Image (tube, rainbow, N blue to C red):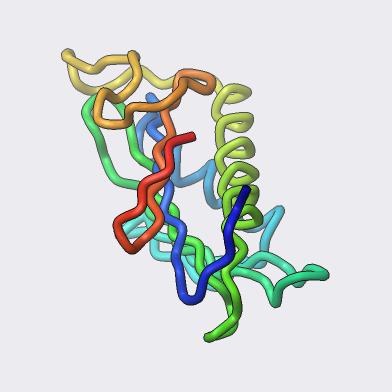
Length: 151
């Protein structure tokens, strides 16, 4: 059962075996297509976007950043309520993260693969993320406040 809490931020990561530029491009496409893109920074590979209003929330704020990782990139998401004091819907936030990651993975799977620039580049899942594999990617979930949830 998903619990609601005040001021919690859901943080999730997804490892993808592509360059940071490819991951950022795919993430930007998802953010501008399925959400309302608020700002972007090509230098830090960061995006800020919002989900739309629903029957239960005023929408969520999503901060995303691409970080270079050995053999690919890590997509980091932080999802929090759009309105201060709004109950955070952990179940809805997890669904938002899943939609973002699924959209990115679909775009990357449809795109031609680039060769990794490093000779020791790997395509196996990131061992730092102990969770199930989704299309060559690994996801880990952390809810701020020290509670970890793995999906």
